[in-house]
Image 1: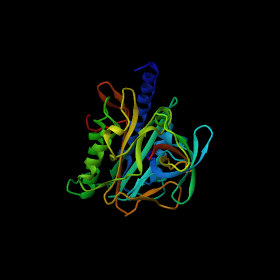
Image 2 (image 1 turned 30 degrees about the vertical axis):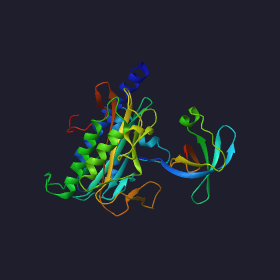
Image 3 (image 1 turned 60 degrees about the vertical axis):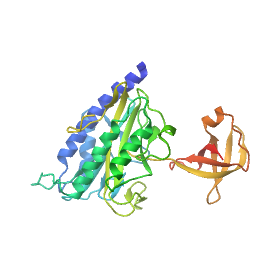
Image 4 (image 1 turned 45 degrees about the horizontal axis):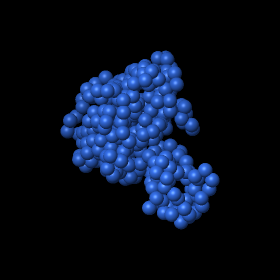
Length: 263
Length: 71
């Protein structure tokens, strides 16, 4: 790795540490009665306190720190004043910008009410989320030098679609660095041969995301703003994303939550 | 933040412009300003009006595209 790449990774790791910590705090904060805007304000305040900048505010036209994607909202939900209810599937996406570099991370949680903190294994929605997160981490393991984007995509697709859910086709993971969205595109599904997808090499910094619906893959703009995208059939949508870099020995997470599986 | 993936569309080259730019007509009689992909440049693949080509477009700019294959 050359010095420029090492510097990029060093800065991104510091940004990722801030982002990971704020995301941990959001997970602890989210419960029944909290509004999406409350979460947004918490994220912004904490990112600034920890020395970073909200990365999403650098996206043209976007004025918030997080994307709040509840229930059938797939991605890019603008945080609203609505109170979260117990059982809601709350997906939140956030980015931290530090010293010229972006980081990107997303997680989806089931909103619990004040008393119950029990994770019900039998519940189909909890299973939906568990499978998604597992698929992401299995796919992340594929991010090693010599592999291709297609290897990552294939694992995401199999992890999700083998359970009857659908990978959203029109939204993708991406390289990340000086820009929030860079080459290569990292779809959650494999189209064509793995060999025709871009090669992965040491030093690459990428954001791998698994974006999926419980029902069919179709998504549409919700229509009330330029951003919110919902599942076409109204089914629940899940979103998990981590930024990582590719070292000689494989993937190393730049953003992580406490409790993330080891890779 | 999730990124909207690029799409591949077929089109017909209508006009050859300077600097390897092309105007390509896609479905709906829409004209897209396209440049030539690097791989096609390296292999010296010539594009003429009337050629059927595959272009890649990003949803973030619907006026532009990149020619990635000539049929």
